[in-house]
Amino acid sequence: MLFDSFDRIRIVNLAHRTDRRREMLRQLAKVGLEADPKVEFFAAHSFADQGRFNSPGARGCFSSHMTIIEQAIAAGESLLILEDDCDFGADIGACGGLEGCDMFYGGYLATSNPADPATSDIVGSHFMGFSRRCLTRLLPWLQASWSGDDPAPIDGEYVRFRRANPDIVAVFADPQIAFQRPSRTDVGQMRAFDRIPGLREVAGFARKFKPRRS
Image (cartoon, rainbow, N blue to C red; front, side):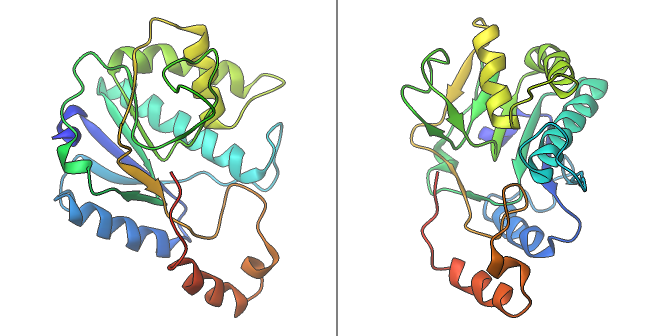
């Protein structure tokens, strides 16, 4: 099974987003991972300001991914990062092993052929797998980007890394096996109805009937 290809699985989750934690526990139960010791929630980083990023949430997401990668390297393990708005698709059980794969995208939006990093931008970092070989090369790249003048959001930085390292083997699930659940964002600009008590709850209920996006 796909999840057997990774030594550790980490789920990025802000402490106050208990709604997303509950949803992710349901997703894990669907694939028999609810009690797997290699699966842990990671307390996502939060910033009051955006720094050089386009939002505080994008900065926190980048920092969270980078720290999770640091921890996996220290443990000498391969890694699957899930974000807490990730829903598993019906085809996930049929997705097999990933021998020879360095980066795995379970869900994504691509501007063209996703396998060609030179021509395709990829949006989405909600289901990202990495080999040990890839992690040791990826971390210095992310650290340099973090301290640089123009860091991209984490999904964009993964694309930049692939463009600079064409020998990195990326595999894209086809059909996709992970989708972003419609919910109040913590990465982009929060909408007015997500900031107002009462309307926030109504919006959350309405999103349950909104189609998922890749």
